[in-house]
Amino acid sequence: MVWIMILFWLCAALVVYHHVGYPLLLKYVGKRAGGRVPPPLPVKRGFKAEASDAALPTITLVMPIYNEAATLAAKLQNLASLDYPANKLSIHLHFDGCSDESYPIALCQLGDPALQQLHIRLFDHPCNRGKVAVLNEAMTHIESDLVALTDVSALLPIDSLLLAVAHFQDPEIGVVGEAYRFWQPGSQGEESYWHYQSQIKLCESALGSMLGAHGAFYMMRRECLTPLAADTINDDFMLPMMAIAKGYKAVYDNRCSALELEVSDALLEAQRRKRIGAGNTQQLLRLLPLLHPRFGWVAFNFASGKGLRVLMPLCLTLLWLCAIPLATQSMLFQALLVLQLLGYLLVTLIHLTPLYSWPTLFRKIHYLVLGHWYNGIGTLRYGLRMLVHPTTQERAA
Image (cartoon, rainbow, N blue to C red; front, side, top):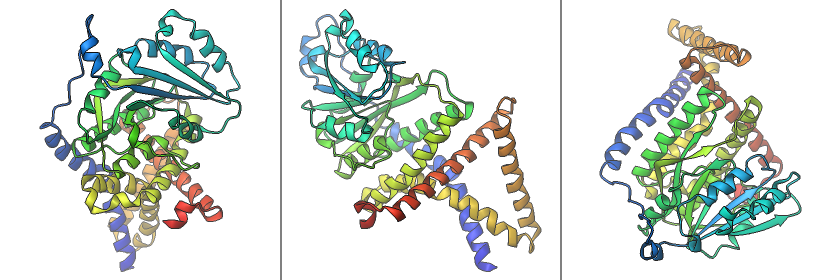
């Protein structure tokens, strides 16, 4: 029984630290560090911008496309509005076996005078191979100083390229990510979660390097690009982290935000979070060297954030299982067991009554607990897949 009690309190400590202790510590230390280093100012462009433009690096903007007919035209018009010299910017559109009108829409848009000033290349792949295969091939066509990666469904602020480029004046910076917001969030919990994630990334960045980026928009040095394993799940996490492993820093700039047009529903959200859960496990296994103390705050943040997130479903399950035998020995554990059961009952009721107006705090708790549930399913599926078909990297790990 003593070992069960030790296990209970260990899991409880990890849960509290991951959700409360670590964010508070990161916020306190990160804000103190961030206040000493103001973000670089972007180059100001005007009617006579030739002199300032000459110093700007060249950029290739890569955009994988799969059945994006609903938002592709808006995205292309958005790219035409970006404030960056046309002779320094190339746009590569990679169509990955689209079965809708995405490719014809792009061809039609190229005739628009607003887009004719842009250097746009279209790569039409007849078969759908997946985003990772597209990104690996796209890397072979990049000759610019920097590469920007963006989703079709995310609109970029007019000065997003200039703001990102300003950071690369520091030769140690290899990756720059920008903030992310929703046009129409799928739920209040989703909106709160991404606001929380933005604050975490800002603090991580102040301490040395943000962990990963958001696929809506981020920028990298060309020399930081590393081909991805074919079965990579979270490409927008792995690419920046592999740059950090090479010795570069990744920074987060929240002065402007990519606007997500895609509205997620419950089914889409569940699938996405299960995939991310599997990806969290995969990236933890493949990036274990980044937990070495020589990486400093990166190692600490990786362990406290992404590492413990993988363990949270197990910790929450053990908290419940350990409380059952302990409840026969103490009223304290009886109360803790009842609180857990009431909490899970509340989450179930909120999930079964989505149209009912629950208080904001309850909806946030629902989103958080449901996220750990999906994370656990994703982790379990990935673990089972690795047992049946282990890859070379997992066998090495």
